[in-house]
Length: 348
Image 1 (cartoon, rainbow, N blue to C red):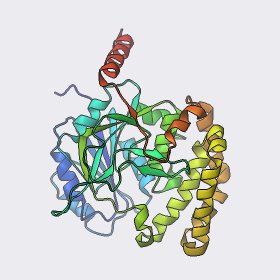
Image 2: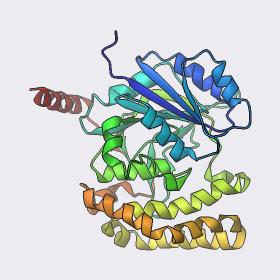
Image 3: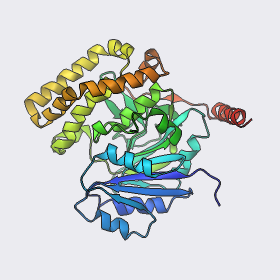
Image 4: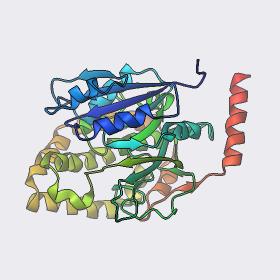
């Protein structure tokens, strides 16, 4: 019987028949055990559910009668699992066999790690080099959240373990203790977000509570990402609406007064760009702005909870907001000694 901690994997599907088989096969090929897998289907209209049931892979499947959104469905999955670690996994991700094992290793390197992320690559065509999809997320001064290395050819520029702002929600391993610590009214992911930017919101809350996110290049997976800034005009209007809405929810909840003052002009300029674009070219996103206005009091209530419990000062948070991708180096030997010492102290 394995003495290693249980890792729970939660997948949210919605019309995912083209990807889910490959995702499940990559789970079945993992070298790490024990694993448990929960799939929440958000009322798919294609063959997703039947493919999951016929896959032959042990999965706890729950089907919603309507699409509740990524955030709410992920919360469902988290509540159904019991692992010490929880891997939020998109159905369009295919993991290398040691992906989970390498992510779990991150938590032994530093006692303060709450999130582990790996190197996500976009599936390469035969005539092209592999492109990076994400090596962790970072925040810009105008309060956009972006993926480090997105669209770049992988030539080893992100081949060192580093502390990052957070992990892409496509494949992020979270410590259960961290999820419990940052939850608001029982929600791990904010269900008002529905979909998009909910991973940045969780990362921001975790940073405010003093948790660290560690990126390791040794954990490799492939992600067929469809939602990219340069593809905005071709994306469904509902996705774009949530993107606009969640930009404002994200900052109302998490921005400290120090960040607000320091980043006022670059964030205001971006706000005006977003508002102008919506009014002139993308009026289908106006409901998102109306949602923010109608629910401002509730969002402000969440903010009060976050700020009353934060451990990280606004001045210290500011280091994450840079024009270029930012990360901080980790001395693995020193961090390993630190983690071992803290473990011995706790057990003694």
